[in-house]
Length: 365
Image 1 (cartoon, rainbow, N blue to C red):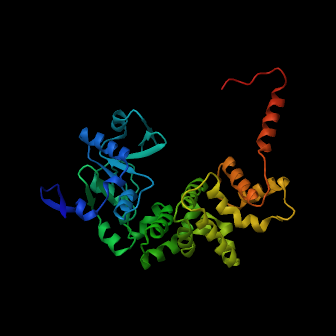
Image 2 (cartoon, one colour):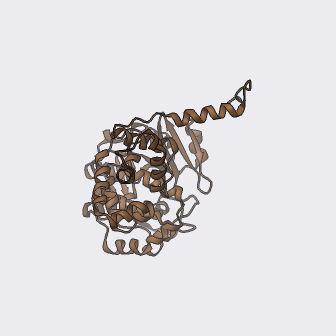
Image 3 (tube, rainbow, N blue to C red):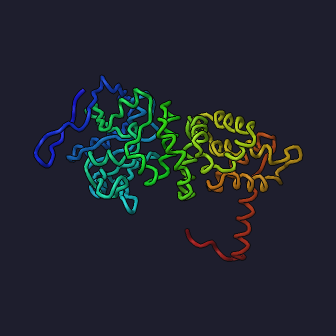
């Protein structure tokens, strides 16, 4: 194990981070996305301090294959954009860069400072950036070229102890961003790490803060959950902490009033597995509800619209794309031997043609 030192304003050099070598962190280089390594190499070759960061490093150290690889650097967005033609700058308050490799998107962000607190939107140093991250198990920096993991906040000890520990003080962490409560539950369920008593107590106390979160953002979170291979465990953790009612209020209410529904619901999430066909993840959310809401003995294709409206109401505040929800409900109908053709979209197309009238051409795209 090595140490990372930083020179302070008074000229003194102080120990700031632990640095773990390949023999200590045991990350398999073959598990690291080659395009992520390429991004790190290109930025380092331009003289910029650059790392793979966050949950991807945690997963790699736990022997898992990360779903996403986020990258952080001291280069500002305009410099990152100049290095990668296959990229674009996004964001308003704090700009970052998406680098594209085919269907893959890598998020490359600049170190943030603590000038305006933990949610600062100004650029800073790595020492500042780590302190605005949420939990220690999500705050590792990995250099895949030197095969070194930099740990400023004792995250390695927390992984070994199997615990989720916040970096930001408890009196601020959820006020700044209530969605961090959902992430704590997700991290705990996905890693098998426990949430300390003080953290659980704070989450239950601050749970109502989720009322202020936009429905679109909550929808993003529930979509990430249902497409996770750990979906049943995450939902159970969220429910035990009193959080699932803010993500899926109708389901959480049925959990309390109909224990059998809860059991079926969780089994449905588990049965989907991690490899999902289009619409399968959404269908796992609404299947058990529709099983009880519709009279399947007399149901036919004409019942599709009723089922679709019921499903959309059930998943609120989530507002999935129309085509995705239609496909999810169609899959459930197919399980009952009922084939629903895509007649609704065809009829709408006919309506549009009639409104344009005969002899009028479609406007150029």
